Image (cartoon, rainbow, N blue to C red; front, side, top):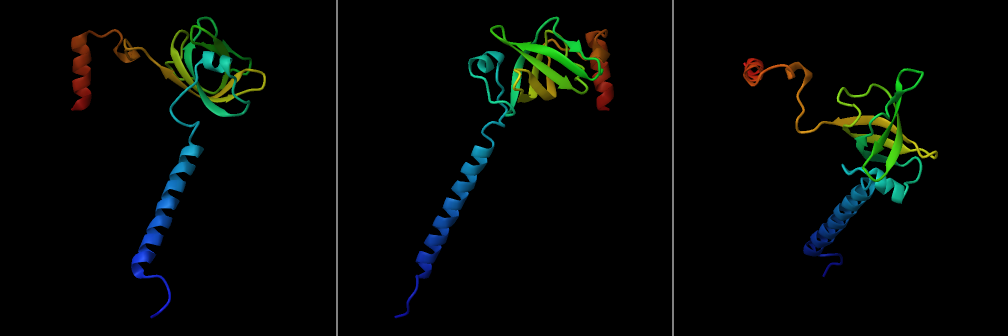
Length: 153
């Protein structure tokens, strides 16, 4: 009789190791992405429990009317995002999307500063269900259909 593990048991051990490694990789990936999901925080959630400064996150809400201010450098804008219960000041340096206007929805990606100002690195402007592109604003329904058909040809 020779020593060692039978081939049947070797396969079972290798299968167990592979399964443990796969589960470990899945848990590691889930842990790494725990805060990078498509979820965003509302201003009232940030007010209730402020995140630690420097942690990457998303802030979602409505741009408050009268809050957009362009700074002296011409590329930095400051505005306030609210949800009806709380508001968070936001600073963004860059070119804002064309749909970014007061009273519209916005999701800002960035970090919370130690001073309580959310520093956005990216803005995602949202539109309502009545959105119409500027090019189609003054067209009738028939003209819009014709324009769409012309682009599909």
